[in-house]
Image (cartoon, rainbow, N blue to C red; front, top):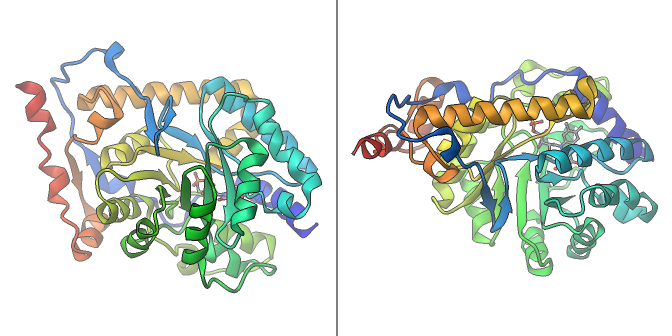
Length: 359
Ligand SMILES: Cc1cc2nc3c(=O)[nH]c(=O)nc-3n(C[C@H](O)[C@H](O)[C@H](O)COP(=O)(O)O)c2cc1C
């Protein structure tokens, strides 16, 4: 019962609260304009893939909800939106349906309404391998997300306090399920060291889930009527920085999803230029569906994708892979952070793509 009301409160406060106070960091990353793009609008292709799962576009609806009967209607809207736009979609944590099987319907509805869609299951890192298999089967998922959310849990009065053994448990999940495992943070980011550890146990995909978007410390503080300092509310690794750290740790062939405060088509273009295979968005989808309904949300999304293609044209990139070869200038706080962490940022500025396209 606690988990049910919690789901409704998460939705409520994700609509009421703004992003931040920390920024996702994309403003420190500048794509270099190409005045001779040498391609036509029809050449621009935005399909991508994550762990060999084909995605018709590089924006995923990240994990949001499921569980309480009242959120079934939200999952229905999300599934219809995903179906119309062809977007891949993750469900919220399915733990409630593992504990209380009668709640499975609020998750299954996303498969019923989107029979051919790409769906990701979702559980926490303490879930048993058997629960992970059950979550995948519940919605016929093509992959499963395992979320890491220590920041959220320790603010929640009813939250977990024991975070030991996660790496070994994730490895056991990988060995048990027959779909790729995506490990994601929910808004505090992933650093290079933990990315290496996750890659070392065979995690197929990392979703950086960085700081700067929906803030679960703020949501839990609001739910629990706590006052947290701005200092604590800003905790974490800004998304753009986390993306570079994770990509530096696990290499160019990595399957990395960039999320957490990805808000604009230019943020998406920058995330993909850094080397992300895809991006994911949660909070804004809840807000746009609540403000404009499905039709308005679809219109908003179509405009979003058109603008993404405009940026691709302006840097001369005809595909998501091509986008990852264009020069990027890193400035400000991100430049300082990454340099101090020993990550070579001139590698981005010195990319040769623009010269090649003129040859
Ligand atoms: C209402 C709401 C509920 C969420 N529930 C889950 C969840 O159950 N499991 C999970 O992994 N992430 C959950 N998230 C986190 C998102 O998947 C995402 O990681 C986070 O919101 C950051 O992305 P954003 O800034 O685009 O919102 C939730 C987000 C929202 C807005």
